[in-house]
Amino acid sequence: MENNKQNQTNDTINNISVPQLLRYFSQIDEHDLGIEAKTGFDVFDAEDCNLYGGIHEGLYILGAVSSLGKTSFCLQLADQISEHGQDVLFFSLEQSPYELLSKSISRHTYLIAREQKKDDYKHLAKETAQILNKHRYKFYTSEEKDIVSMAIKNYSTQAKHLYIFPGQYQGKRLTVTDISNIVKEHISKENNIPIIFIDYLQLLAMSNPTFRGTDKQAIDFVTTSLKGVSRKFKTAVIAISSFNRESYNAPITLASFKESGSIEYSADLLFGLEYGEINGPGMEHQKLETDKDYRIRIATLKENNMKKKANKTPVTILLKCLKNRNGNTFSCNFNFLHAYNYFEEIKKDQNNFSFPVHQNNFLQQ
Image 1: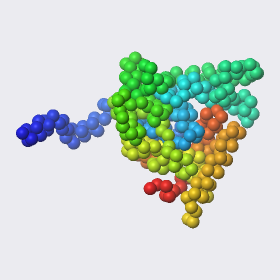
Image 2: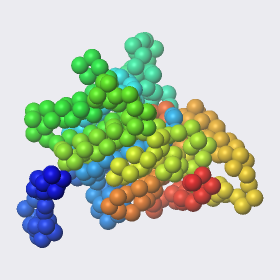
Image 3: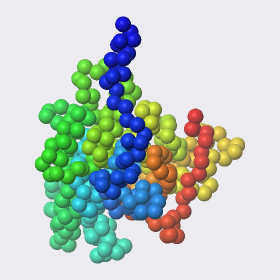
Image 4: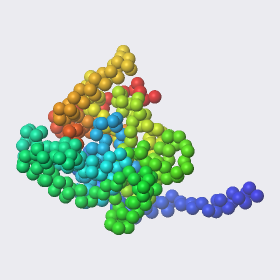
């Protein structure tokens, strides 16, 4: 009886031989080229390194501590991808669509003001709150109003292919199943496979309302389901993730991600953002230094950077690729102007590209 059941099971397995699989490569010119989205950042788009030409199919996860610019970075990335003609669906589970639009308009006021006024941009460029404030025009000069109007016009051109969705769908918290249905509907209407952004992963609801598992089990399911969406639609899914508290005063590692087991193994590419100086000269964990003293040094560095952000001064942010399933890991520095939600890549041939990645082993167990 058992043997019969086993035989029946084996009969249903679709075996594919290696010679059959190899035909894919011999006929590769005939296949759909698949997603390759330009981002406007050389660290992603350079043909000869890192991601070899742009964003491709796969699950990308980006993490950072609070207030380090995760949403701003991904929104700018989404805007720049849209600018190249690629459809983008941005699922915002934390902030309203108007908050996101205000971030991008703020960024454009800075870019316009900087171009017109060079260093004297601070009184013309507007922060997110100033864009959102319905009374903003009451005290604005005609020049300030013109800057905002130009920023809106410029952004409307850049974001022609961007679609923003709130965290509610049909009156309930968004699930991965909802996202899959929305993507399917978009492809049917627009005949264009979109890049998918999710802000952020931990706020997605379970598709099964009767689920009673742990938070870790929920994140495991959500992460593997997002990987399934990427495969189903042959596109890139870029999800923001929070970090655990232990990582707030330490260099980022794979262990920094909450419920990191599933995130670490399911992601095709895993990125972290942190202050560039943490990996800079003199910041290595000293031989006789205690973990506590090392954390205090990092906390002091972060406090100094918070003061810079408050003074509308750029801070250096390191984008660190912790995992790249089909390529090499890498890192790149950005100047981040927090007040205007703007990331500017620091080219490797510039003199101020100065923060190499140092290995820190004391928290990697």
